[in-house]
Image 1 (tube, one colour):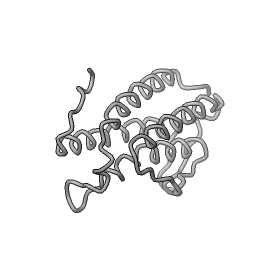
Image 2: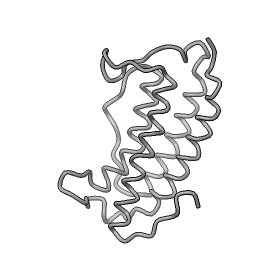
Image 3: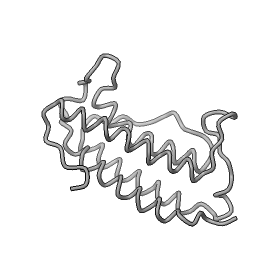
Image 4: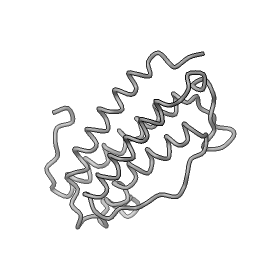
Length: 152
């Protein structure tokens, strides 16, 4: 088969979602990285770091079928934003480099009994980012940070 017909739409949406996430991440105060809204929640710093870690991990899983487990943790919003922008550009380039015939292959980054077509895993990446961006909105509101409108 060939490259999925709607891949261009997924890539366009991914770019938009990434831009919206960055706009929100930029508002995170460095001095609140240890804060969390509940004892069972991620800290603000862990949540922020989760964005580039999960994206790069999921894209590596799309490419190789393996989800890596070794990631860098950033301690300031400035360095985190720079790293996320860089890793996102590299992730998009990796996705664009996938040969047409490889899109039909199944990958199993979470175990042999959980296989996904590559495009589905790419879509999971977008859904995952949106989910955690919603959490970030709540965290920042609870910290009395001004937040932008979602589509403003």
